[in-house]
Every structure is written in structure tokens, then in C-alpha cells.
Amino acid sequence: MRLLHTMIRVGDLDSSIAFYTGVLGMQLLRRNDYPEGRFTLAFVGYGDESDSAVIELTHNWDIDSYEIGNGFGHVAIGVENIYQVCDAIRVQGGAVTREPGPMKHGTTVIAFVKDPDGYAIELVESGRS
Image (cartoon, rainbow, N blue to C red; front, side, top):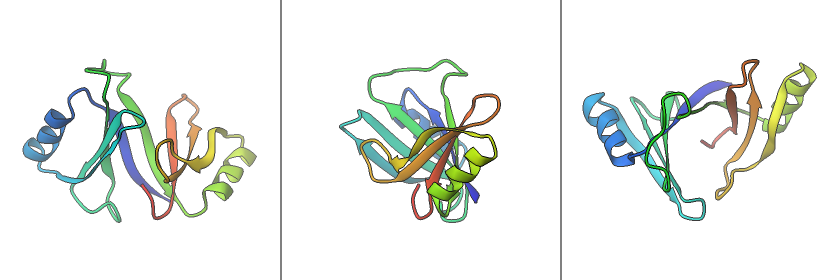
């Protein structure tokens, strides 16, 4: 397993991309629109996603701003076999809050678990992010 990304929700995607790339010196690694879900995902970071953790900027088209605290989304961890990992988490008493399967409006195979404080941890099957 390895840390893939941390997701935060942003109100103005272009301003956020400009900040992370222009001010903090990250690169825009990829940007995808999901018209059916009315959101855009942009990934920024200092290195390639294959070997570096990055930040996922999520822009929900119908929301202009978030309060600090409700903008945090999740931490993502890459896993080899998402079904086995979810089974092992359950055996150890962990809560799988979204069973493995394709993400809405996409094909990436994901699942979600909660940590003891209720924070969301996204599991992403290897080769996907």
C-alpha cells in the first residue's frame, strides 16, 4: 500500500490550480470533467503520481465555496486487491462504508473506509487513481 492523494473541495478551480502551480510550484498533472456528476477533478503535485503523493482538487460545479473543515474530503491509499483489503479491514473490526466498485461517473475501482474518528479513507485499486 502507499499514499496516493489527499482530496480537498475547492470553490474556484482555476484559482486553486493557479495557487498550487504558480505559488507553490506544483505541476498540474491531470484534469478531468465529469459532466454527468457535475464535477471536475484536478490533480497537482511535485512528481508523477506513480511514485509521489499528490493533491486532488475537487470542484463541484454548483458550489462556490466551502468552510474550512467541510472542504476536506479524504486521504487515498493505493492497494493491490481492493476486495481482499476490504475483507481484511472488516476482519480487523474496521468499517467499510462504501463497498468496492467503480466510482460514480467513471471506471476507477474504489472503496471507502472510516478511521476511528470518522475520517474517510479511499482505497483505490492499483493502476488507478
